Amino acid sequence: MSKLRPKVIRDPVHNIIPFEDTDCDRLLLDLINTKEFQRLRRIKQLGMSELVFPGANHSRFAHCIGVMQVARRMMDRVARLSGKKIRDDQRTAVLVAALLHDVGHGPFSHAFEKVTGESHEARTVEIIQSASTEVGKRLRRYDKQLPDRLAVFFDEDIEAEERKAAEIPDYLTQVVASQLDADRFDYLLRDSYATGTDYGRYDL
Image (cartoon, rainbow, N blue to C red; front, side, top):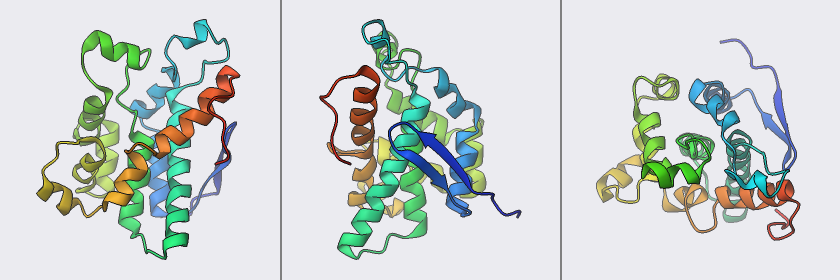
């Protein structure tokens, strides 16, 4: 396998988002390059809000990459403060879930859900677990069990046995899905930046 040249994404909120020469970061870059994820470039983060806030034309694509970076920082901080060892496979699952958490969004984001009655979470799980999507194929190529393990981040009704089998502790699933998660940490900063408002600014 050829060595991965250092890659960075420059982001207006998080500045430099690096990708190292690791199996995990290779997978993340592969997922970013799928057609399902690239589609998020055309999905507005705040739906039709740019009609009121002209600067609010940022995408779900940028937001998802930002959430991945926040999740990485959160895990690094937890490991440093608690002394807990986060396994590589657990770390990969969290970062992949953070990156893909909005891949199921339709046009105009949440406004589309009200029209179709289908949640973006349900669509996200379909994309992740499907054997015919580029996302699903890349996940299975990396680890055949990974698509099923990712369900613990998106399905609140998952059986206790399945949750236990995924071997992802609650404190890690909460990095992606909780009342104080990487998703909220990113969109507060990103949306306030794009709209020119102060309500979401804080020191991350």
